[in-house]
Length: 394
Image (cartoon, rainbow, N blue to C red; front, side, top):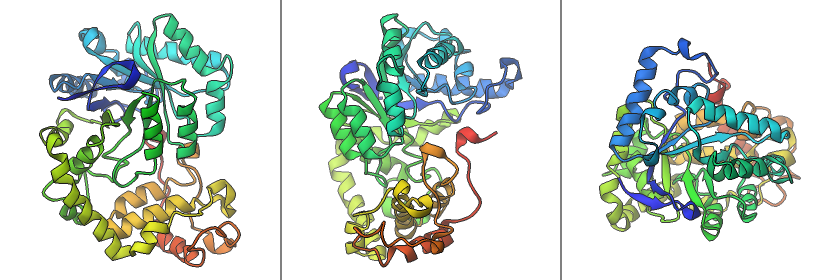
């Protein structure tokens, strides 16, 4: 394993983290006695495998159902000083509720403290305000820190880049969990801001949200050769020193294996990556055209400023990926979340796009005439039944 300084926390962070949202029994809280023995055994085997590999960062959240409770059955058995344990709690308008939830997380984990506490899902300006207002959730987190129950405080986010940057520029957080990987590089300005503030940078779900890379399209496999798409993406992310760790959402002990192939390549990234990136970029140009790729995102409205709250930027981005790299399954998964994921993935699909006049909201786009048809194409290509977020699953 390799390690990087996690910003001003000064923690020695492994470049891979063990994310806790895929090995738990349920996305809802259930009594410990209802958790099957084989599920608990698999979780414990996954944690022990992570530690054997030097993956000392165990990351979970109060919103991950039974994850905390199940981790509480094994973490107290392990050498505490060798672990970096992180949980996340959603900010609320009532800071006392936030405090109670953090204390419940500590009881679930059976730990006296967590190394990292994240305010979970600062996805909107309103949630940022809940967090930062005097006496709000961040102040409560700092009080818990003073009591020795929390060592460092950060936030996780699925927000638009400008909201993430706004949160970072307050200088009040120690680290950030955010999305950034090859197919979604929009948050690079936020990573740069975090670097300026000496914050730890944790990349959320690079293999799942980064393109369903555990079941990649054949086109992506061919374009990323001789690397697997998963290893390519890991190497792409970690070739940037501003990035400190990538989450591996392991569901079983062997889920770490493919990622580990990245480690021996890190010092060769400057030689290995450029030809693969060039192939990927040229493949997108061949199918979409260079002018479109360079300008499609310009002047697009946000969902709240669009008739029907259609999320035009996300839909066009998913269409690009589907056409350029045959990421149809990934596009369907993400597209069909629209309208069902609240602030975690806001806005609606383009199912009813023909009913709306988009001319005014697209007035600043160089592709205003083309975009309505692109939205219709995307809905035909990616539309289907609504998809629930994992946390909404049974």
